Length: 611
Image 1 (cartoon, one colour):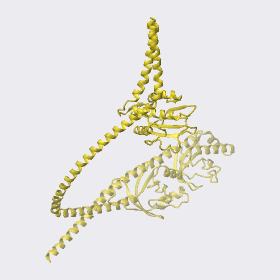
Image 2 (image 1 turned 120 degrees about the vertical axis):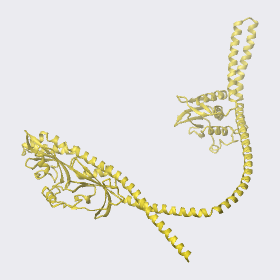
Image 3 (image 1 turned 90 degrees about the horizontal axis):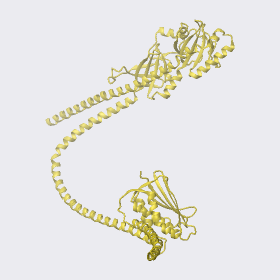
Image 4 (image 1 turned 90 degrees about the vertical axis):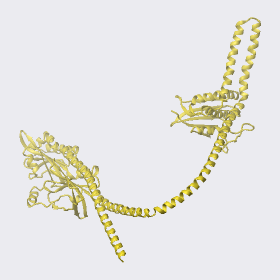
């Protein structure tokens, strides 16, 4: 019984410590995480607030010199001196309308010294200012004192908010009138919302009389952040600054908490409206140009979500630590059992290792056998390629014999003549015949050397290959066959040399094979032509070899690159095109065949350009 009581007290103590630790962890996490979140929001809000202040300053700066410049225009002076002259007034109205269009101002109008508007840019509008009396407006009164004045108010004719600039029109050192310019506040709000303002921010600009004059939220406009005094209410009524608009206070409560940094000049506010209640992060800055207090309110909904996430993370992390502690404790208890199991496992591993060693030895033997077999396959492939080359030379033997027999016959004739000339002591004739004999020997040497070079075995080394030189060499090898068959070659090559990467000897074999096949395909044609073209298209070399023969049967065109497939009776093994196809693929290229619409077959080689 005593043991059970002791166990209960211990469990209760552990539970109390765990819960206290959990609450402390949540509070520390909240303090650190929320403080950083508010600091980040402060940085973002401060940057946005600075952008807003600069934007408003720039807008106002665009217009502050316009009234000053306009006041010097003679048209204004003429209209003030002759207010009954409709021609002069018409010129004035057109001038003000043109300036309004150029400057994008809301309205520009001329007031005489009695406060009566005699000309306006909106002279054709139903809400025209002409004839209206603005003597009560402070900007008019200050301008009559001889200086540029500014003012903000709600328009009397259209009820739209505006910022006003006014400047006196001086004639012969006397102030005869005031030129005024109005900037639409609504345009400023819309333009800033479209171009600069982030959707997560709202702004309010508060005038010195504590009235929200500018805001991107319509329900906050012409409201006060605090209650107005009786004197302020009377001043607003006398100035008609906000026309007939009723000014009421926004429902705002300061809800700043302990997580909010106190040294940044920011607040947390709860704003109630018809749309409901929302909490915002509030930051303000004085705009010295117009003496306006600019407020930026940011929704704290993301921070609220982050706060909930921090609670979940802190609880999860703490519980994970508790579970890890319990797990570690359980692990210590199982250490002895694990040690015994480890010993048993080590014995099994040794047995398995012995089995794997034997399997590994067998695998190495199989790899060696496969490598030996691959070596034999490569050797057989090279021998097969060489056999195909020799077979190709054999197919051209008749034309080669014809080319060699002619110089040999000439050699015999010139030799016999040389002996006859020698018996007659005609040294010049002998010398001439010997010279001709040397030329014929050189010709025979060239013929034999071409085929000797072609019949060499490839070393398998890849190098940079000049396409045009390889084509010339291939054409030299088959020219005797072409001459005997009366085949005409035409070629079109690139202006600049093009190169590919691969085995030059094997590449030349492909060209010889394709040219020889084309010559044989023309055996039944009366007019025999082979067209060769080389072009560079999109970093690839395109070589086309086209003949004007009968072409390839549709049933055979998909089989021409198969090994041992041939349409030639009692000639070849059908390996030439198969070997050529593999050689081009080994050079990262493609060898294709098709029939030309005008007749004949086209073999196309596509290889990447080697720069």
